[in-house]
Length: 81
Length: 286
Image (cartoon, rainbow over all chains, first blue to last red):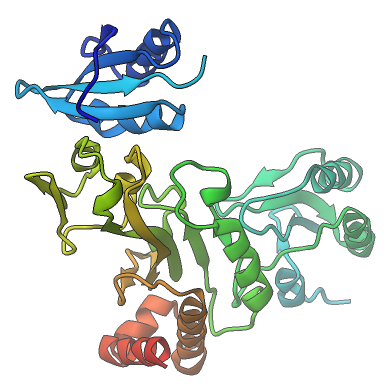
């Protein structure tokens, strides 16, 4: 599961809930099925909730990387068109 | 003829400031009404009331400005739409519930099914004073379980299933209690910190958790003239039969020990917390 190539990135550290999820969702919509998105998010509420929302949309979460600067990158494989 | 207010109150008819006018409280379970019931309620409010209804603080509906002479006709009309009067006074009141796991993504238990079961078991049971049940589906506590005489909160007990874990690390961040630590790819749950919210399981991409859905039950909540947060005795109840036994034991304790007009919290305080805990644990371990 550690093998993946990131196709696109989105930074949601400049927005707050619920726009965090919306921005990530829009970025995922622009990808094709199977492509990988890296979502950069803040610690706290975004990292608590955004991964679950992405999962509930049906996408596949591969990894959560701690950037050790108060942000995380969530690596997601798009599922569905 | 003298008006028997106690009987009217028992039947859900609440005396208004306006003479001979009553606000009729309806029987609602878990905050749900069908469209058919709503249509009938609207019809009665138009025909027998003044055209409005009031939503009560505990998920019921009241139709104000019902006239004393119309009471039987109002009851019969409501029955056509499957609507019954509610209750007031010293008895088991409306069983309240949030939407629970059938509707809400956060829900851990089927709150409505449980509300119906409790309603069938206890609704309108005569007791020394009012007795309120409230059911909330998860730790978000939208239904404020602990403000009820007996509050039930849904929870999920988790155990990590290593073979399905992809080591993504989402659960550690989803946990708001700091109960999860990951060391060298191994997940450890601190059971003293876990509050059974289920967020680790719900956020997990592979649902690599064995789960038990259960109940956290609190006793003695009040939110009126006096305020008290209900307290749990057993941290987590896995089994619904045991939950029912505990509910029976709590109601029985209240019935056997309470003075007239004394809320559950004050009965527990007066008779002794230790005695009450013993009664509950006996029912649990039966």
